[in-house]
View: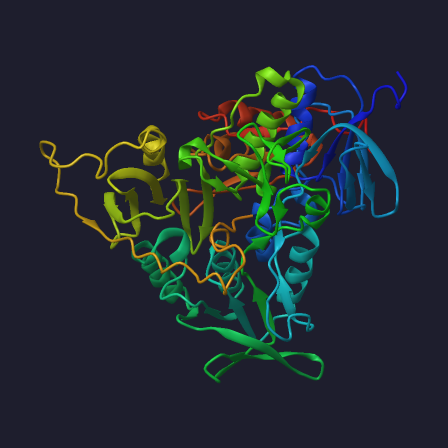
Length: 442
Length: 71
């Protein structure tokens, strides 16, 4: 078989999703050529430890390379981003002008850190955390014992970074526009539990705070200028404003793609501007925005580890299946985060939740399981150090069981429910893709 | 060797910590910290930890795999 007669399956994105997709192709019996393209010079690596153990100095950034679970027998093209797509000719072009023909394409390019939108984002001492190099650079900077660390953004990554910085004994201020940390992910009721832990750990949390710009002294960041005119001194800044995607090369080729993702059909095939899927292009992981039946077919990305794994396997399955055997992908999101000595785990989607009930434990003890309801249906569950209860709610969330779950059973303490306290949605003018910023877990 | 744990799946049963205490550790009530790149000499212990996990959350790269296509 020559390369011309039998072009490769090409995976763009040497990521968790890319690797698991490649393995699934081999496990399903694909024996043809396989090429994996990555913009970074590294084999696929695991991101969750980057904002935790790598920052803390417990792990070297290079230790995060992912295990290969099946021999993928791929040709690796690392350190070269894909820059152009020719759908009619079925080729992609890499940054070094190499042109690769494809039989079918799996896009697993993930997301990148959303840059700080104001002035001073590029100053020395201003960091983001997304890739291995980011984490290694930030770790080196933290080891230099900065006097004051400022973290902009109280999402999962910002909170994890704050926790690591306190473990290192550094002075940390975390600013967020919302009243509590994790307000957009978990709501303010649960977010307040994080605020309490943060305070106990010695983090200075500044709610309702908007940073306008970073200012320098001697060519290095020295302070943040706030929108109300105030300032916060800082010699190291971590910008944790969530993720966005570089999808311009896909949009230029006529696919429905923007900073919020690459729109796919239910079978993970990329949608074209003409309204039909391209049968040769699939996507999985952070980049893929698809109609998830568990969200009422609303188009959404799920930027979590578990989705990268499952969606890549599903897409690989469909890539090898016939056109009349394309199966829809349904996914119940899940994530974990460890910070301030608590293990936070969640399943489902808290988006739009209007009720919350603490069904095990208590917020005062710091260990609890919260169930979220939306319009009378159970939509999500969040555990603080009660992980073993979480799977019990999985099927209820998946089938949209009535909320609140079980009330007034014999010998059961009454379960109160409250408003979860989600902040008002952002105005369109504040962000191009308002729904995505909350789900920033690596 | 390379190891990854699906922490969505992990329930903190800590059986891995008994099988390979040098490479798996529970912090706080249920946070699993593990070494994703243990030395090859530890393979038998790591594989024991993998087998001991009641929820099968641990994935280990088989010996020699991934080396055949190193660039």
